[in-house]
Image 1 (tube, helix red, strand yellow):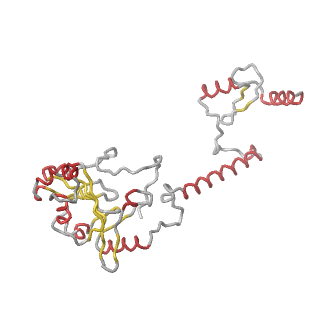
Image 2 (cartoon, rainbow, N blue to C red; image 1 turned 120 degrees about the horizontal axis):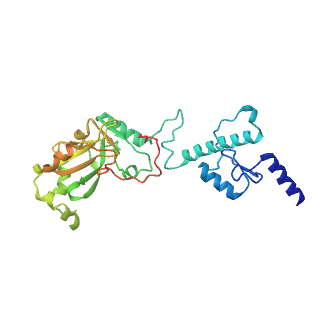
Image 3 (cartoon, rainbow, N blue to C red; image 1 turned 45 degrees about the vertical axis):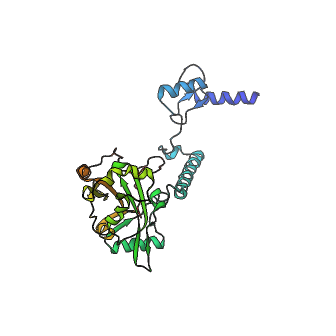
Length: 288
């Protein structure tokens, strides 16, 4: 007991007087700003008055003559912490595709690389999202070597009806209007609820309906471009950039100008598919 009291007295004499109450001997030193305090109440007062968080800056400049073993140990642990953080990000399923190390290149499975190459031969720049994205997981587009064709995953958005459909294994040589007839002409493949939503479209003739594709080139403002419904899917995708699969917006021609003149701002998510994200980071998404 006596040794403990003696130790506290030595610390107090070495630290001097408390810088907050200026009456009692100091017992503590703030790791952040080296302020001297004597009690918990003085520590709290110091943090409030000086707006100090009490945490030592791990990157603060330390002169060589002031370094000791504790300083070196702290720096070593700081470097270890950074290394562990980078390793965790590289292993994390939602971050590993954007935490590309120097000299590394992202790679695609062979069948997707072949699909991308065949699309390129047809004049289509095909890009893939990281594997944890919903659009990548649901994409069923494949290249069939024996047939020599691409069978596309196609999404249809009937914006005025607020309904979405998906066609899978669509032959690239299929004419757009043939695909569209499935939804513009009453048939048994649609549920009563879907038919009811599409009634306004079905009551209009083909000439009163337009099919648009959103062009989202890097470095340009997102815009819509009308496709040729009497041409095949392959011809319509030529000279286009497709991310995962083509998405077509079916709109009434009376409303087409509001789409063709559309310019999206940073806060407009009217036509953007919502993806589950973690915290916002200042890192760009790496497409394959």
